[in-house]
Amino acid sequence: MSDTKEDETFFKMLDSVRHGCLTDETIDTLKSCVFKVDACQKINELMLESLETEKMELACVDVVDESGSRAKFDKKQEKKLEKLKDQPSKTAGLETVLSLAVGCRVMLRHNIDVTVGLVKGTIGTVMGIYATIISIKFDPIHVHCDIKRATSRLMLSKNLYIHRKQFPLIFFMRLLHINVRASH
Image 1 (tube, rainbow, N blue to C red):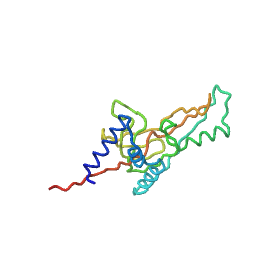
Image 2 (cartoon, rainbow, N blue to C red):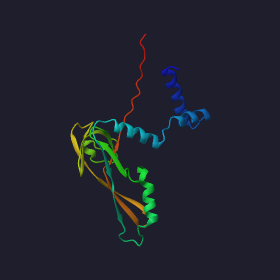
Image 3 (cartoon, rainbow, N blue to C red):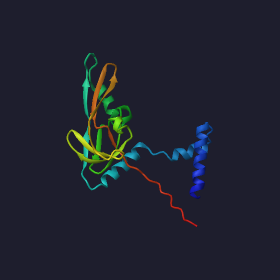
């Protein structure tokens, strides 16, 4: 099938989604396009390993806040925290362990400074990894920026919170689909 025909078919499927008129075929086709999170993580790990620089594992710092509460951090709470390990969407985008290397591409997961364009989704290249900062050259501003760990407050249970400190970044791999068409 030609690329034009495939594009037209895909646009029709998206249009049916927009109108809420999905066929079983459309649902099955769209489901086949979805990558599972663990598959994406494996691809990211392979891409990170392919870099010639040393990979660094940067663990978050979780601090239990029991102030003003009778709730205690016990085994039950520890299990709740462990469940959050692979769910950065529930930890304000802060990873439990962030794997990076000098030269890898990263994406911001928090707004840092909207006045200069350091907003969630901004992409850049890691230039240096240090104890308290990661130096990044972001694409739109073409200067090195030092990113510090961000802190987010996460509720584990009523009146029991965790303060998570982590760099608000995620490894970013861009896949390009290039159409090559013969000219006639």
